Length: 359
Image 1 (spheres, rainbow, N blue to C red):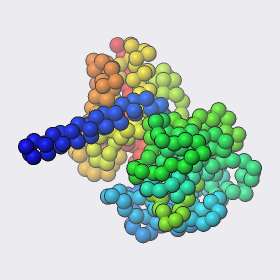
Image 2: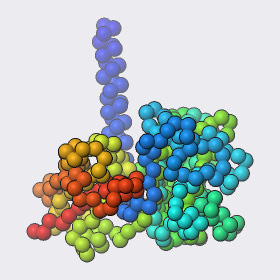
Image 3: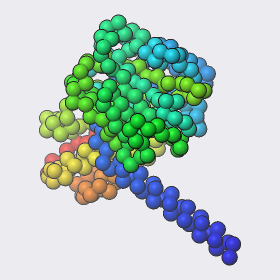
Image 4: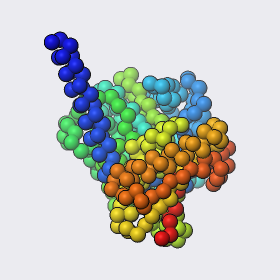
């Protein structure tokens, strides 16, 4: 009898886990974030040494160092001062005092939230470089985007993740420590900000010209902040317009686990867009072609690129696209678009191309 009860409890647990995983996957099917295609800055924290300052960043203020969290290399914010506009880190750029953000760009990173109140778990992004550009920003211009585990705010605009226990002016406690994927999209004057699969705020006129990037964590009461996978990318011609002019389009926005063909959830913005494009234009047929950087052996990269292209094809089929309209192939590291000498170059070469098949 005891064995039967334990078996039933185990089956019930795995059923709940499977159902939760299915629901999480379904959520990302509504994701509409499209990352920029030309990578300006990329930091995946490979080959970083714990305890050292992150090699691709400069310090504005506070205590920041490399660390490892649950097997992942991360940037850890240990301590920040009382004045947040004098804290944080900025990406190392060639001319940091110049405007290094184009009129259309995206920013993405992952942030971890520990147990505690929002005031103890707040990440802030300034859309200017607080070390080199501060004097060029009007003190009355608001450029800060604040993230908690459940909310996003920008000036007087704020929003909460759907179906959470958040209520305006009533603080909530982080009960489930986890990673969140942050995404920012800016196009000329319009600002959109996402938490995981949900668009939280949509500001039609941000009221300023972003010039750079600063990231910090409000490290109070011994709390620590952790971020990883930071990317800044330039926006591009809309994918369908690119298809009409070139007969293909390329995306670096479909991401995979390291050395695997497992598609990361944040890739669903691009995949959803392609699925809708193909639904709206039933004549479209695509060859999905995967490419890698030069890390690892040529043979392994060839196999990996084939599996990744096949994974994208299968994901589109799950979204209702007839498999007869899709083919897949991989090119490994054989067709780089740029040198593999920098992390940005490698990220640019890790791409998926959708090439129109003429009927």
